[in-house]
Amino acid sequence: MRPDAAATDALADSLARLLPGLESFTRFEGPDPAARRSLWRAALDEPLPEAGAGREAVLETLRTVVIANGLRIGAPGFSGWVTTMPTTVPAVAQLAGALVAAQRWWASPGNFLEVLALRWLARLVGLPDHFEGAFTGGGSLANLLGLAAARQHAGESHGFDPGLDGLARLVAPRVYASTEVHHVVLRACGVLGLGRRALRMVPVDARRQPDLRVLERFLDEDLAAGRTPVAVVASAGDVNTGIVDPIDAMREIAHARGVWLHVDGAYGGFGVLDPRVAPLYGDLSKIDSFAVDPHKWMAVPVGCGAGFVRDGGLLARSLTLEPAAYVEMAPTGTGDVRSPFDERGEGNPDFSLDHSAPARGLTVWAALKEIGASGMRARVVRHNDCARRVASRVREHPALELLAEPVLSICCFRVKPNGISDESALDALNEKVLLGVRARGRAIPSHTRVDGRFALRPCFINPRTTLADADATVDEVLAVARELGAIPV
Ligand SMILES: *Cc1c(COP(=O)(O)O)cnc(C)c1O
Image 1 (tube, rainbow, N blue to C red):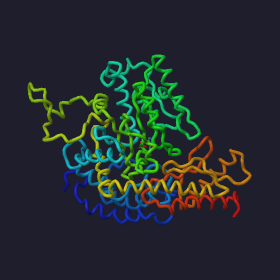
Image 2 (cartoon, rainbow, N blue to C red):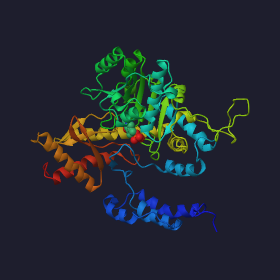
Image 3 (cartoon, rainbow, N blue to C red):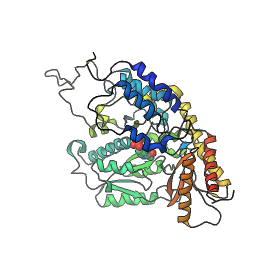
């Protein structure tokens, strides 16, 4: 008899039952089961069971329903999202980490590798060695770390500690970013008590970059009115079109006024690895904080972002985790806090919003150990090439229109048949084309709006994607436009 209802053994057997299905899932054969939602829902939806069905029944449901109907965002033709399915080694590392590095803050090889991976990541994107930070659940929280440090910086510049004392003395805080800023930055402003309304959106110019004169004017107006600029946020790769803001110029404007410069590189931070676009990132050693998402271009399992700040002390004072009797032990009279468990690991719990958490960086270590900086560089260059290939095919075709010149690995375009100039008709046509392309299943881009126009938007970050898939995206769009009678056969 087992002491507990849950199996704590039979790992090899459990995995063996799932492996053939997982292996075949990664080949993306047959029709995409996404359309069978009503079937798998019916198979899964049930009330809380009073009696457990047992290990074998769970594995059988995983095999026949969950894996068989899995989300195929890793298919080579899928370019819809800015996240993707992980590659093999980081996915397997995550499983190993779940078992052997179950708490990130305690000494273990997983804990050590998490901290090593954070240093590797900083090196990879060109941040100086003194930058500190933490792995987070994603870019949402990585940006929040940067802004938490910015808030601390603003408070301390005014002689108080917002982490300890709250925000009562932070007069009318303001954050500045272009209108293209990711919406999680707004939420971070709300969560940090600055308020979503604290974000002043700077209009963009024809290249969709923030108008720097307006940025300066906003800052100077606010300073003159006694408000408190907390941070300027630059996007290094926005999710709509992949724009990299003029980071150096924004930093100079911010720093001239004592204001923090945060860079949101959640998607495009890795773009700096492509020498053709690296100059757009300017001198990252001079910024104040940086967010990047290994669970996007690096293709580690979703649940892994990373936030870095130039001064770890600010971050630690912002997110201080006060001592707790159940964790630490201070030998009488010493004030010297130590752990009753042999060793705290490396990394600083005051850099994170997590308390209990997995060693997320283990997957980043695995990815970088497997392919090295050169493997990451080659991937980024190949994906940027894919966007350029789509752009050149679009430029060559009289019935296609490029809506934004690719900067990184996104290319926004639309079908624009000769003679149709009505914008709402073009929007409607391109919506139909997108759905038609999706239904055929060979290529799956997504959509956005560029200057108000409905755009087809392939975003190439999937390691399984090649130039042939980029070509197929254009071919499929043309095929559907012909089927719809929108362009000549
Ligand atoms: C994806 C993304 C985010 C949000 O990150 P999550 O990992 O989804 O939480 C923020 N900013 C940019 C530019 C992004 O691409």
